[in-house]
Length: 386
Image (cartoon, rainbow, N blue to C red):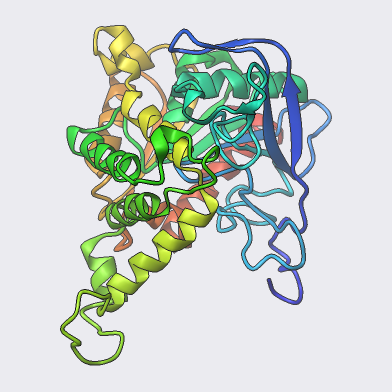
C-alpha cells in the first residue's frame, strides 16, 4: 500500500460480524437455522438514518469494497475507484454498507463454515442460495443497523441483479437503484459458461465431490481453469489486444505447450491467485445463483409486470464492449421500466474494457455515476425536493 493513505480513500477499516439466530428459509425450501454476515461500513450514518447506501457484490467480490485492512495491504478494496471522499459514492455524504453474501468464503456463513449439526464444515451440504435469499439476509442486516430505507442500493453484474431484486422484494425500502453491467436473467450462453466452469472444478480429482476440506486437498487446477475461463469473458477482444497483443514472454517461440504468449501467462497468474483465495464450493454456489436469477418468471415472464412493483428511481449503466452482459440486456431492463412508467436514467458508456469496465476509473462512467449520486443525496437527505 502507499506510504500515505490517499485523501480520497476511506483509510483503514475493520470488518464487523453480525450473528443471526432467526432461521432463514431459503428459496430452495432449505432452512439456515443461524448464520453470520460479515460487513464493512464507510462514512457516518446521519441523525435520521437517511443517507445509507448498500453495496451488493458480484461473483467473486466480498465485503471489502474500499479502504485498507492494515498498512501492509498491497491493494485497497475491490471498488476503491468509486467509494471514498469525493468519489461517486462519497463517504463524506453517504453511510456505505458492504457485506459478504451468504455462501461466501470471506467471513459470512458458507461452505467453509462449521455445520452446527455435524461439527464439520458444511462443504457441499451448504444449501444452494438464490438472489432473493441474499436480499432477505441483507434486509435483516439493515434492520439491525436501524436502516428502514436505503438512499440507494448499488451493484454491478451479479450485484446489479441483487439491486433489481431489492426493488421488487422490498420496494418501500430503497429510494434509488443503481444497476451496472447487469441483466434481467442470464442468456443460454452465460449459463453454458458457468456450467463449463463448474465442470472444471467438479472433475478435478482433488474436488472429492466437494469434501476436499476433509481430505486436506484443494481443487486448485479446477479453480484455475474456472477462473481463466471467467476472466476471458470479462475482457473484450480490444482490451486483450491492447494489453497483450501476441507478445511472447521470451521474445521467441519455444515450440512447447508451456505458456509462451503474455496473455497465457496473465491467465495462469490470475487463475493461480484466485485458486489460493476463493473456495471452490462457493464458486459453484455463486454461479448457480446467477443461473437461477429470473424474477420475471414469477410474473408470467413479463419483466414490465415484474418491475411495476418498484417504487424507486433507477440508474442503469452498460458498457459498449461488455459481451458477457451486453448493453442490449441493460436495455431490456430500461424498456421494461419505461413501459411500467418508472423513472429511469440510462447510459451506455464507450469502453474497450469489456465487463470489467464497471470496476475501472473510466472518466465518463465516473462523471455519470457522480452526477446521479449527487441527485440521490439532494433528493434523499440534503433538502432538495424530488
